[in-house]
Length: 400
Image 1 (spheres, rainbow, N blue to C red):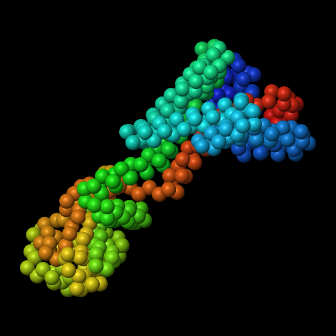
Image 2 (cartoon, helix red, strand yellow):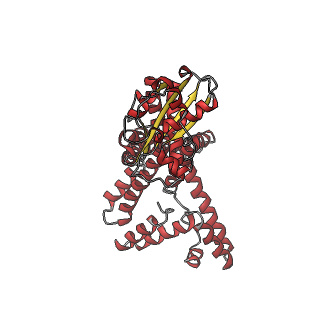
Image 3 (tube, one colour):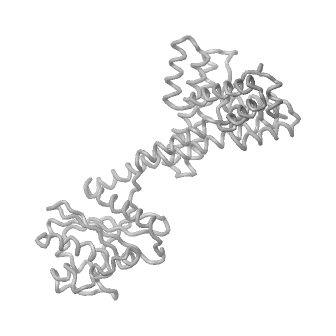
């Protein structure tokens, strides 16, 4: 916790307010030596002041802190712990294994919490996962070492509070660790949780309408998200996008309703004469008050049929999605009464079968990895690192 900006200062103030001036000073000294960038600045000031030994000592302490941070990375910390054991360093192995396991518990709790309760669930799951893992580690420690066992993480902090309830720094450690676990759980939920949810939703969709059709809907929804993100669309007016696939050629054609065509500046696409669908189904009626040409289906099929005038309805399939301003995501939409008049020429309209179904959000591996890395980085700063107590006191004073 001492390496985390802001939280370290709160802890130091709480220690000072509870008359633990020595602990307050140690916390700030730890911050100067452990916090990335700040540590390098501290070392540079010491070097400029001619205290080369102090500068070297600060960086040695920083590297020791980095070693503790690496321990908290799942997988990496576990392998590192195994290496420590191989070389007979039991303490180093235990530290790495415990730190890595704690982070694994936080990430697992965050992912599970996200699936159950969304972002709020991810935060709660991260906190709960960290506490649960600390309990498991502590119980294992007791089982192995008996009375010599050392409580870990939250268990250790709670024991310190019981031992000295007047030291405010311990309370900051407990609350701060929970906050950072919650943040880590949140980022894990945003990464792994969202990816799991995406595959679950897409799989459910595929069972209903088939794998290829599900992919077509997901891709159309992703395209609409990109358009919505890159343009200033008036959310008070409905935006609809249709994607038509010519199964004979494999070509795909996108069309948009009148509102989206204005934004995309493609209003002239179907204004000259009847559309291809109107030509193929001349008896179609205008059931609604608005013109049939305002629909996204007319726009998309116009492109497809111009590209392949010989396309038969059996070769054509389509999906339509609309932007839902409340949920801020695309959902499937059923054809309007105007468009249903052109059914003989439109082939298979997949989304008529599943109207108002939320379109799964594509989550790439890069975004997942970035979210996890951010969470682990945040959590790594909170790792407790025992710095050498025999460092040069004069050097410390010069830094301050």
